[in-house]
Length: 144
Image: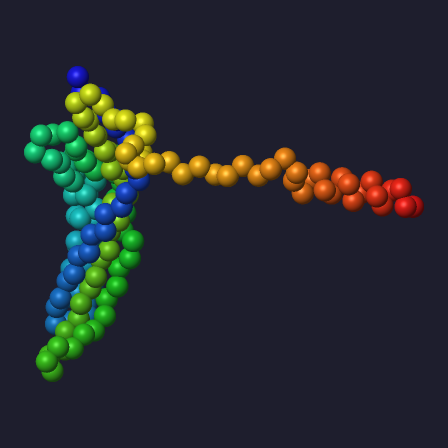
């Protein structure tokens, strides 16, 4: 008795990994070690739920994804007279959000409120600009 639909929509999850150290070289080494490990971990993830309602009539999953590194930056920062180096790795997880929606008896194909009156457009009278244009064009032909 349940009817519904399922669709896939493109989606992206952005993951930011930050590294902090006292030397520039150490931050670079940490980022060099982390990058392949994080990419491997992201590629091995199974599909994961994004949300659902208690009666399981609506479910969202993120799956069919591929991961890549978008950017890697290393810079210097200062906080309360303390100087340090920070590295930032940004990963993109591009995939699809799978939407599954059901309802007992299905959904109505009408998207507006049925109790609200429908607005109708006034139909113009038979004499339109097209007919008045024809009259002018025939007058010009007769005069020439």
